[in-house]
Amino acid sequence: MRLTIKVRPGSARTSVGGFQELATAGEPVGAGGGLALIVHVTAPAVDGRATEAALRALATAFGVRRREVVLVTGATNRMKIVEIGGLPEPELRGRLAELGVGPDRPPDRPGASVRTRTRSRKDQSPR
Image (cartoon, rainbow, N blue to C red):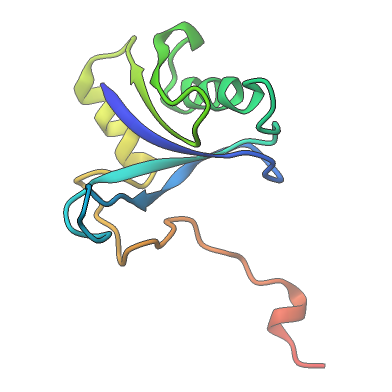
């Protein structure tokens, strides 16, 4: 299964989930360009470390071996296309839906993240 991902290097923790809506050439966001799975990694974007960390995170999230996740394009770009194998495609699509993207779970609004922010104590009680 081919998948477009957006890597966010230098994050506080490594996680896979959420989406970003993509635009096609000459079209605004939301005009049918598709979705990119967001992969947050702690590694910096230096010497391919963020790319390798993203591929490892995807392998873990989809429950496949690292060698089953192959970078197709985007070695030096934050937007990447990867090929994920090792499981039947319906099972991979099911895992993708669990991560919060795909046709089974459309976005609420363009640019929205599936993950919710937990409120801190400071946000909850006035001082």
